[in-house]
Image (tube, rainbow, N blue to C red; front, side):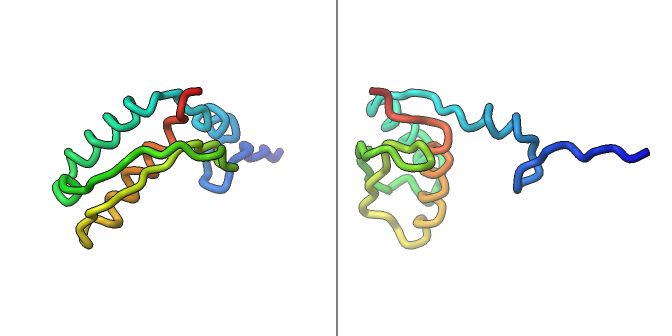
Amino acid sequence: MSRKAPDTGRNGHKAMDRDIASEKIPATIKELQARVAAAFGRHPLCRDVQFAIVSTPKSRSGANWTVSMSAVPPDAIWEASELVADIQDAYVLAA
């Protein structure tokens, strides 16, 4: 007797988990600024990064905002980008 494997996505997660995780939390520009500032402030390499939250047309991934960064130290580029990506995965700019 064979058992069917659970329906999993490319990362090995169940399809239902993907649907739940894909729902983003609405946030205002001020809330997004606070979250990005807190994330950068916690990371020693990113503390001096200057940034602005920018509204954009909605993308395929559901993102409708991005971060414009300036004065990024060379050793902080990867970390700052990862922090922003994590926050973008969780939040959508509220209408």
